[in-house]
Length: 298
Ligand SMILES: Nc1nc2c(ncn2[C@@H]2O[C@H](COP(=O)(O)OP(=O)(O)OP(=O)(O)O)[C@@H](O)[C@H]2O)c(=O)[nH]1
Ligand SMILES: [Mg+2]
Image (tube, rainbow, N blue to C red; front, side, top):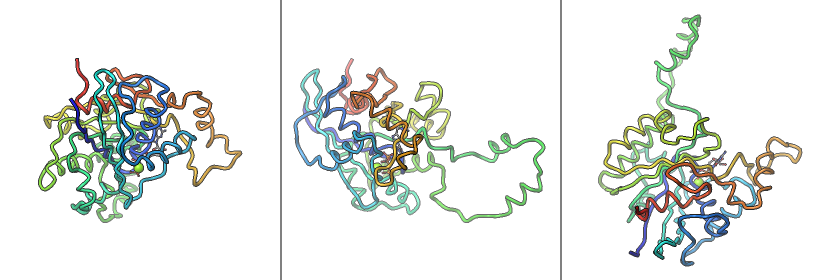
């Protein structure tokens, strides 16, 4: 079995897509830890990935993907079990592109063309995002019994115009997943690997499907009822909080540099990575990719 597997990484802004791509590239390139897929043939232009991977290796956050930046990062991977070569296109589009699509109901032709030939999706959500979907009922439960009702009325009197960007993240994601499967895009998705990024900032338990069920109930229900195979992985691709190279903290800001110091002290940078779920090796970022590629056999 040969041929190109084409997957698309999607997710709203700051959901962890570029960090995952950078770490994945580093891990397969360095070969420091066991992975189910290995680096394949050297085909294509990897310069952008190398820039991201270098930032990651040096212990800095990867830069934000700009709206106009459209980089299809192709990674060539190989399944060592039967020697199958996989050309995996990991299209990385800005999260902003997807948020704009929700607000305007239109997608630029460049962004739309990135879906040509796409088989499966990696969907990124971050365990580090605060909840943005509390209902009136949730709020009422949270309010203390002796709260001054008049004060609430006064606050409530200030009506703000509807801003589509403030729509809860999971609503935007479900809308996006549903829209790309409709005309004119008609993307046929077989599998979705949900990557819960920044898992180091996640819950006490180590159960990513539970996190999705409890934190993003709408998305969880949508994924369960669409005839799509779904897996949920928890991934810490960065391993902690890292500073921004273009805006570094002061040298004496030990708090801001604490995680960086700890992560840089590991002899193998690949060991900063943690992957949870589906029998994945502890640092194996290729595990979801192999499953998405239909290469996980009994
Ligand atoms: N603590 C922690 N933070 C992470 C991890 N992975 C990513 N982050 C942080 O999450 C933020 C977003 O990560 P990116 O990889 O830039 O996210 P993105 O989805 O590419 O974002 P856009 O380019 O804006 O669409 C950054 O501040 C990262 O430092 C992680 O494993 N742990
Ligand atoms: Mg990005």
